[in-house]
Each structure stands twice: as C-alpha cells, then as structure tokens.
Image 1: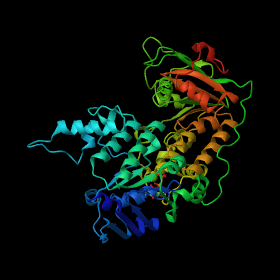
Image 2 (image 1 turned 180 degrees about the horizontal axis):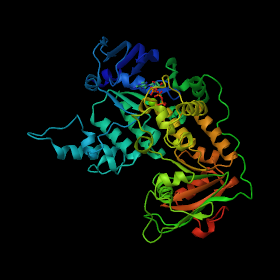
Image 3 (image 1 turned 180 degrees about the vertical axis):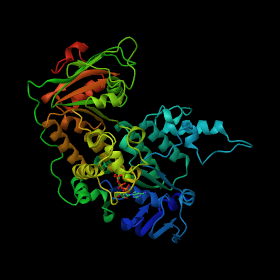
Image 4 (image 1 turned 90 degrees about the vertical axis):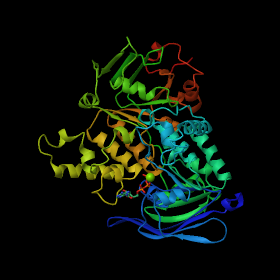
Length: 525
Ligand SMILES: Nc1ncnc2c1ncn2[C@@H]1O[C@H](COP(=O)(O)OP(=O)(O)OP(=O)(O)O)[C@@H](O)[C@H]1O
Ligand SMILES: [Mg+2]
C-alpha cells in the first residue's frame, strides 16, 4: 500500500454495545480511528476502555454494532466476521493491559510467537533472534533475547510486548496502559516509537491514566464514562482539567489531602539498621514512626523493592550482613509474609498479577483472605463477611456491575483497589505499599490519598514506594531516596523537593555515611 493510502486508513465502530451475561458494559459507542493519528481513550476505572479495545482487536465479540474498515481507496468495508486471527491479519494489534506473554518461553520466542519466521525446513531461529535484538535496540532496551520471560521484572515484560508489536505489521496499534509499569525514561522511548508509527500512517490507540502523557502524544481524545461515550475531542482543545472533569463528570477536589503532622514524641515502630543489600557496598538504615508516612523514592532498579523485601525476609541480604530489624522495640525476623502479617505488618506488592489476587476466585473470597481470623475461627460468617465487603466497596469505590464475577474480570484499576481493601481489612498497624496507585484513575487516586491521610491520623504507619514523584512529595513526612541499592539520603519537611530527590536518586548527592541518617534529620552531602 502506498504511503498516501495508509495514511487515510479509517477504522470505525458504530453504535457498539457489549454485554457480559445480562450486564451491559458498553452502551452504544461510536469511534473513528485514522491512520497517522494517536487516539487516546480516557475514562475512570471500569469505564469500559479495555473492553472496547478488546473488541476492536477481536479478543472479545461485540454484542451489537458495526465495524468498518477503509484503506483510503474510497470504499469502506463492513466487517461481519471479526475475531483475533482476522483482526491480526488486517493489521490490528493489541498490547494488553495485563500482559499476554508465554512465561516459559524466551524473549525472542515471545516476540515471534504466532508470527514465526520459517527457514527452509525449520524455524529460522537465528534470524528471529537477530530481529528480536533489533526490535529491542529500537527500544534502547538491554533485555537479553534469550532470557526466559518469567524471570523478567514487569517493566521488561512490557518492553517485550512492545517489541512484539513491531514484529507484526501493524496498521492499527492499540496500547492498553503500556506506561503503567514503565519508568518515565522508558515511556519517552515508547513515545518516540509511537511517533514513528504515526508517521508511517499507523492508527494508534493509547490508553493511560497519566494525563500528562495524553497531553504529550494524543491527537484525538475520546472520553468514556460508565460505558457511555462522552465525546471525541481534538487533543489541542482539552486541558488536563477538562480531561479530568469529562471523565469523572464533576469538578474534582484537591488531589492531595492535608497530611497530619507526626507528634514529636511519636514512637519508632519499625527500625532497620545496617542492612546490606545484594549488590551494594554500603548498608542502609531507616526508621518509621507511629503515624508517619515514609516515602521511598529512586529510579527504577535503585533497590527500593529489594530493600523492603529484604526487611520482610522475602529476599536474602548480602552475605555476612543481615542487619537488624526491630518492630516496636523487639528484634524480629519475618522470614515469610504470613509472619509479618501476624505481627501487624501488611505488604502490598507492585506485581498485581504475580502475587496479588487469585484471579479465578470471587471478589469476597479474595477480599477476606487475609482477615478470616477476624470473621470467624472455624465457620466463615458470610453475613459478617458481606457487610465488611460492602463497606470496603464503598470506601475504595470498587466498581463492578456484577458482584458475582471473579477477580480477574474486574477492570485493572478496580483489581488494584480490591487488593488495597484486602490488605487493609486485616487491620495492620504498619502498611508497606509499592506503587499503590498504578493504573488508578485520577478521581480514585484522590480518594486513596485521602484514605492514607485518615490511616496515619488514626496512628497507622506507612511506607510508600512510588515512582510517581508528586505522589511521594504530596503524601510523605520524610522521603528516603535510594541509589545503587542503598539509601543515599533522607529528606524531611521543606527539604522534600523534586530537584533534591533527583539529585540523591541519580547519585549527584550522597549522605556522608550511613550512620548520619539513622535519625530523622535531613542529611546533606
Ligand atoms: N469477562 C468479563 N466478565 C464480566 N464483566 C467484565 C468482564 N470483563 C470486563 N468486565 C466488566 O466490564 C466493565 C468495564 O471494564 P474494563 O476492563 O473495560 O474497564 P477499564 O475502563 O479498562 O478500566 P481500568 O482503567 O480499571 O482498566 C467493568 O465493570 C468490568 O468488571
Ligand atoms: Mg483497563
């Protein structure tokens, strides 16, 4: 197809409806995608974005409505038969919100899965490996094409998905929250790639809850609210405030609540001393007081998750230096999450799919998994359980049309809310959360922030690991910054400031020695 023709590619849906069983979740959507345009889809968690793009790419069948495709030659073709195989053949490629990788295969094998290059008699593994390397190079990624996918961290898995899309000859490329698990830098590389696709006349659909990103790359914005089409707009006409208002349907209150001060005499709840992480030369120490939010900032890979998981006994510390962990003045060795939980320490991992919810199980089952001791010793008191669940649904604004679905059928953001609810239902006193608002819409984010403020006001202590620097700044009393698997500085009060955090995070600034930040003071280089 000539360049001119591809650029006038039009893929449209008319009056699209989708029901799961008796429940309708999309109510008559019209959407027109054009070659050479980045079309963003915005909406709250559960609004129907993923369902819509799964239909576009043939992963879900539509219940009612029409799909049309036109290659620019003037005639438009109604697509009556549509499934994933046909969609891929027509060049419609979806990168799923929850990845769709074969975990046991290598990176290169995944990139060409279902799209293998054949040699004369056998698969041409060598060419596929070289090509895979090329795709990864475009992404400036150092992932090894021979690595097993199940060994990769989530951001790398996302990069593999994106590399995989390059191997297919996409005319319509749909990205469902690709940046939720990427660093800012990785996201920028992705945007460069999207720009190249755009110039080649590919129609791009982009879903994200990060309004800055939408502002940066979208040409057209379609807003969904609760399965209804609010409208399609030229991106240049909408400010971020407009976007938020259209999504939520009302004015939003301030994103960050007032966080109550930590009383001066507040007790240290958790003290970690001289813990040497693998791959680091300097041990780290920190303390968490009652009623405090201690933020952890740092670049991805700086060791924030590793530090917390070493404290919790989920990973080994460097040989010969196990450090010391004290909970309420008593030396502890957690070893396992269940031990930590029994002592009132809750941990919300950032890997929702890997270690969070049981996706095949019901919502109430997932919700009360950690708090059964509260409900009844032997028999599960379902009435009490239901009441608690109902309350949690209100507190966290968990949205589903049908309460009998399994957790895996909740929208991505609502899965994250259910995880939070589940962890907190066990009434922990120390809460450690890693990327708590990933994939969560702006209205709900604000709700979660207010909820965190209430938690610390009532004497809970919180460790917040987040790559969202505004979130760390907006919520934390103190911020520990990590660089190269050690704490490079601890900021407090007015010292908590983006540039200062970045200086410690990039190694431009470093504490003189780890002993100086044992206390709660700001340390300067
Ligand atoms: N297989 C399914 N069975 C039943 N209900 C489903 C199924 N898949 C999605 N839903 C429901 O459809 C609605 C829309 O979900 P969808 O995943 O499309 O939302 P979303 O806009 O992508 O949200 P998020 O921002 O949280 O990812 C939700 O109420 C969800 O629970
Ligand atoms: Mg979604």
